[in-house]
Image 1 (cartoon, rainbow, N blue to C red):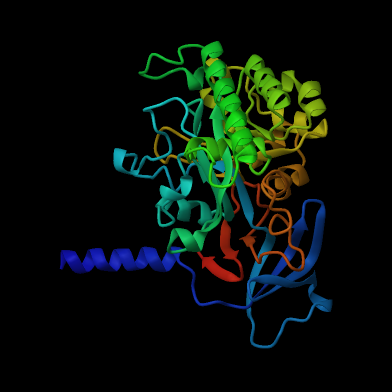
Image 2 (tube, helix red, strand yellow; image 1 turned 180 degrees about the vertical axis):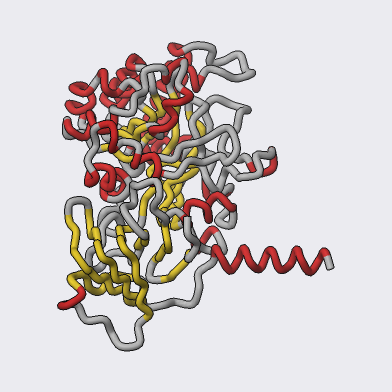
Length: 408
């Protein structure tokens, strides 16, 4: 009997997370937000073969006969979590499901997120049930370079089904987060930055050797150097978690020195450096808003108002769930973005932080982030204003498949 119960539980998890039979779906909503600032009263989005085929007012948009129609008070593009560790960090909060950070060395760019990602982790389904359809997840902050990140849809039975881009960014940390550990080095900021700079220089030399080597005489393969060369070539960005203003300035200097694509993450003190960040044209994946309740140390100056201040200054800002060291291990970007509204952000700015902005920052704007013909059929359904506390997510559609009917 126990074995049968376990089998049924596993089958239920697979059914909830995995792709159902492909569906052609139309979503009809009293308010259809096709993108931030663009709302259609009594709108319809038609999805065929996983892609959006039509968007418009219900009275002028044909819904093919026999198509499944989902009704909602409000519908938006599927939400995007700009930075997370779900799938590597698990809800049980036990050593066996905590793969987001490896403490044996300060710099480990060779660690691939795809080798640790678990698409059946309950935290993934938790995000999916809250309207999050795309996850940028992987190794979290806490070491000078903690490892790689990936982009996945919040559905799929296997890694191959879920993952959209296996190597989307390299995760780094500056400040106290990179120096507090059991090893003796790095013990302070200057040592951490010296180690990072040294690795980047070594990667430049490795790249030069690869480019100048005669056929059959390339240097020995180095997985860490390969990952760093991808950063130096601009193929993937370096996401640097930095909170204190001086660490943010260090990140900006490094990006200028080595000419890599920088994405700032956390950035508690970003409101003190608006001119510098704007001049560098660097996007910010802002700290989870409600983390303010636990601010201290490098994060002592984080503020509820920072996101709005940055956006008003023309800086690209996306919201993240981040990493929580306690159960339930993850935040939800829907709630985090909602908390920016009482502190200066407009509805459209809040929606942008979890749709179009992360899509642009992550290079996904041709695929997700808005409801436009040709893009993925990813839609979040609500029974009211998405950012009102009493509103429920009533369904989630990913690539034309209804993957959640749970009310959250």
